[in-house]
Length: 293
Image (cartoon, rainbow, N blue to C red):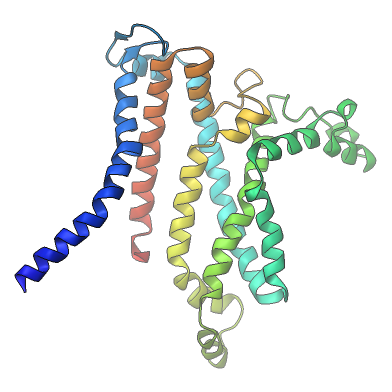
């Protein structure tokens, strides 16, 4: 018996080891390397100077753009969390009331399979001023709301919210599909039994749907929050962090400092902060959703 157990553990180790090595090489080692680079004054080329935690001190005490990027990142996370219950509600309604639901879900899913560059350019065309053919401003003018027209992604007061809408639109169908698939996996017999007991509609959703898709709610929340913390591509394509750093997020600021300003050590400090935020968020959400394990 013990011999068989030892053999089983060796077999498990043989199969796990390749994946573990790949994980260490592609994830863990780069994180450690980034932490090391964050303690250097280095442009990415030539000789580096060790400065300890000076980059982090400057980051938290002197860099106003960092605090703007942190605020914008948390703003994206907050709006992303608002989107999750909406996608769950849409999935429930589509499953219950739409006959050709698979077709509708496929339509919802189209934005997520589009390149972020395509999505960014599409929405830039929508947000453009009227002089550049901006569709949104043309609609506002045609409906008598000319006073509402703006240069949406050039105006510091609206730019970040314009980007948030684009990000929410792009991932909307992905989370609807996750919830829709989980709901479809619930046996019909449970809803029929609930109907006999007088539980239909909202009551059935509260007592059957939500508990049985709890694990998907946990996974989707973690994916949404971590994805929002790492928001980058839409910002880079549409604004590059402008105007005047008002749409900067941690990822875009890290990119600009590392590869545009050639402050690679400082950019590595930003990446270290981002990794810590993702780890903290994952731990908090795992504990919050522990009941669904």
